[in-house]
Image (cartoon, rainbow, N blue to C red; front, side, top):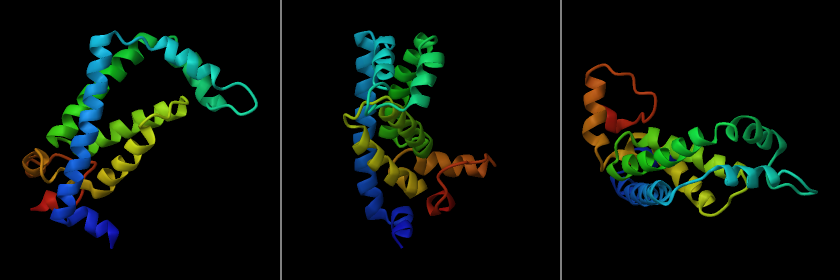
Length: 169
């Protein structure tokens, strides 16, 4: 019943639009801040790795190993991906374009930050993003998805995310 409401109700779609634009603004401003402020990720990664030690570590050992052995040696690549990922997720969510793909990318980044021992606004963003993901196409009803997704479907493009009545209307 809740799933049906989230996926098909037009009033809920308006509420989801507020969530979507709020999250998009948060991602966009964070990404722009990193791009214009000179984002250096290696100190963040070293800090996260250090949080894996002690009696009550904030970062799990397997994640710290990933950060130390893969992310840290490739820190410039990760800085680029984080900065531009935040900007692109933000723009897509604000516009309501490929909403579910953008929301999925955003929630992946939220979990990466949480795994790294950074709480901040990430739990709140995860919670709001879950509503967008569960809502499917209804999350982009009042955005560019309203026109783009049916057009892609008409062309026979496979749509991995966002199933719902909107795509059929």
